[in-house]
Length: 467
Figure 1 (cartoon, rainbow, N blue to C red):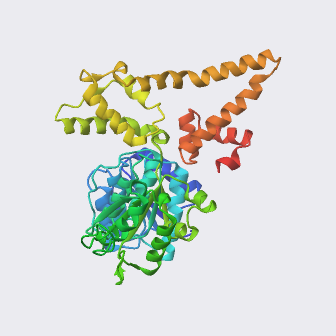
Figure 2 (spheres, rainbow, N blue to C red):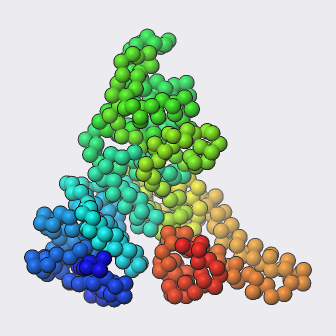
Figure 3 (spheres, rainbow, N blue to C red):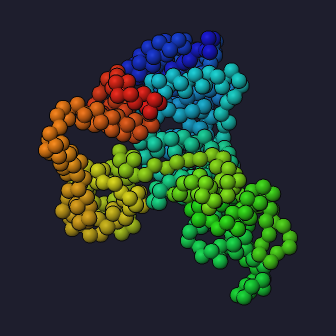
């Protein structure tokens, strides 16, 4: 790291200045360029250890810059910085050979840590593998930090056929993530076959998975291929894997170990050239501890884990999701998309959405059909959502007032000194959870400066929790 030299390429002077100061303070030599063209000219005489580049710049953009460098210096780690933090940008960056992807706005500490990892990778000879770029559809939408981590995971796995376990509540889009993993993998030309373990009766599940020979049981009038055979050379998505019966868990483990299986009633082994992507809303580790799920199978499936946030954990994505689903609902019905009033959008962002993105999509369909005018107002919302507004707006204030009245009735004093630290602790922990532990972003959510947040964490004894 002592000889490391990091380049920053960005047409934004303020961004260059901030990053230069931060890297210098961290003891990392840095050189800044305002254009990719200038950086390329310098590259003819000097090669840095790693590069951080913006995407949208006048003249040559960051992706073209990336490809030009990779043609001459395939082992040079390049980190893509972009304010357009959608799935297409993330996957495109990795598929074009980027070392990593850094969505704006980001914490400078995160940029420094990522650059350090890139410099270490350059020293060890590691580099991203290039492949042809693809243009993914907008099936997964989100700019929140939690969704950026999902996009990063999809991008990093874009050249892999590794087994993946997806965790997420019902309605969060686990199958969409599985489809994206498939379509950005070497198996993309093969089939994507999905099976929900909870949707098939237990006595039919084995035949559904492995198929059967003709005449092996009543009603088996012909040989039938199971989902494993149908997914040959492709991907088999096993949704709600936690509901798989114990005997089938054993068979699945054997297939993952041996690479072949038998149809029901069959005697000839069938090769299982299939990538497994599993998903569940359950805590599989807890089920392992209870003896309800095989520990060895859990470890076989848990090679790479992707966690999808619930909708209320990424409420900043709700406005763009609303717009997307209102437009798609209008297309389904062949009508003009209705507009949501600003107070309606603000209110919908405060709800808990237990059904997650699926529930939001259904609400948009309901509004498209049921709302009378072209603009949707609060009175157009379903009644249960208006009830949530009253509950959400009054619950915490009412509880606080009741607590204060109760304390005063008991003759308590100095309750401000008791309540304020608890209030601040809860707010800080919620903000840190929302931002994945990034202090600068958490401070912004709270309306503080980073130094204020750090001081509060130390005063309240939350330092270790926040780490």
